[in-house]
Image (cartoon, rainbow, N blue to C red; front, side, top):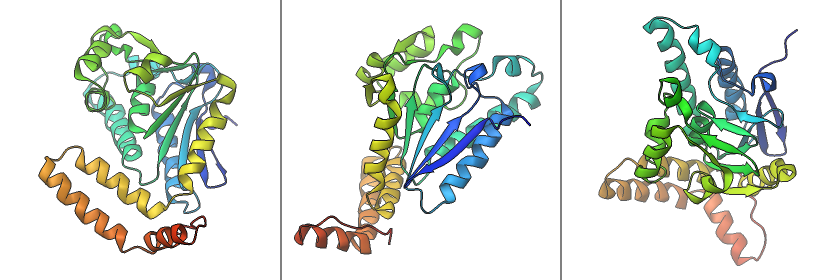
Length: 261
């Protein structure tokens, strides 16, 4: 029986999703994306999982991009729509997940790999990691949300440079331009990603959910509307049991125990 292209496991309150196609550098094809969506749903629906780490199997790649042989085999608009609509739907689900998400990147994160990272909240890179959107060199352009997410996350001129040239960038430059959070030694990658996820998982899952919704919605609003949205959301937080627990713990000089209520 063929091994699943996606593996999931739970480490305490942290769910780990591994893209498991190391022989093709974890490239994304339709069956893999569909299995990713199924596995993602399991982690989303598991109340015991409070944060999710996404990584790639092996040491050579996080996701080296779309499966070029699969893409090249497609003919006709209907076939392209199958792939494009699927990957857009799945990456948007990742982006809007109420739980904090972290990408743990070793090796290549190119094309769809970088686009997947753009849908994740935080990104930890191993030394030697390589990011980029090389689609232009194939007569394509980023089509899994990359054109829109990148220009919302880094300077427009930098985003255009990456997409117009197709150049690859190393981990240090990715952090310098705001595309990732940190670079860590290769042998510490998962330890660092899991430790960060565990720290976040200790926080109130209710507050994290409402905070993510506030950030995601507000990013595309005019300032007056965004502030009104923030006011409504913080009002919900202030009335929660977790807010009272956090304040009580501070006054009592103890660690809070958040339940998500």
